[in-house]
Image (cartoon, rainbow, N blue to C red; front, top):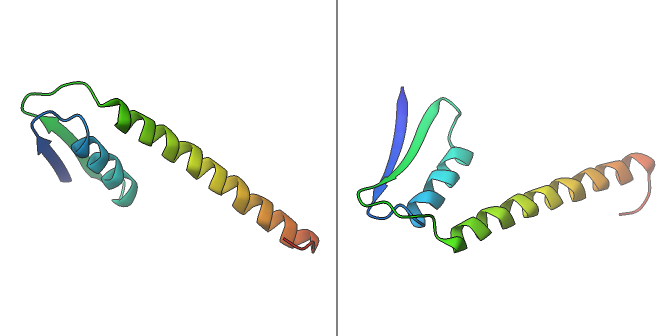
Length: 77
């Protein structure tokens, strides 16, 4: 088993983001963790960034689907 561990003090911001990025970029068989030696709660900025990323990705997927549908009908984009 392969794995990546992000270790920091609070585990409240950068290590959480690094874990999320690694999970998206690495193959599914690679396990990813983030931990802190004195963990605190996740900072609100990180939660907002994660929510923004999900909305951005969903919008990008919808735009790409609309563009493909438009191309299939021969309509200009």
